[in-house]
Image (cartoon, rainbow, N blue to C red; front, side, top):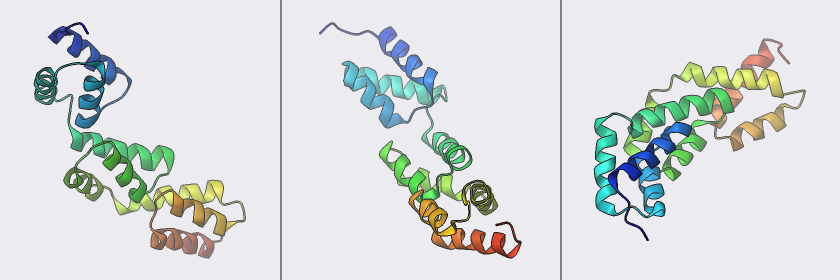
Length: 150
């Protein structure tokens, strides 16, 4: 295997960030798979932190916001996904605490109005599988039924 230099690892990391933000674990893992040595990887990760390109807390907040709004995923599921991406429990907890309760209810209401189609039990099961709390799902169903939105 050819020896890879500092410029190679920087180009590779730039390529990874070109597609989407990454976690420290993802960068470390991908660089190891490419054959970079541990010392180069650690130095590069330190540089990425100092350049503010790598920040697992910021990544978590963006991931949760996008997951909620764009994909209608609940906090339980997003927490599991972030854990799989290598984000620490402390950072995940901080990102979840930053989420507004009203934002979650708005996502549920919007999804209910779009996807319920006269089968609220099916919608309820779907949203539970997507990681939303049962009490929030029931609260939204009650609110919308009381307001005659079905």
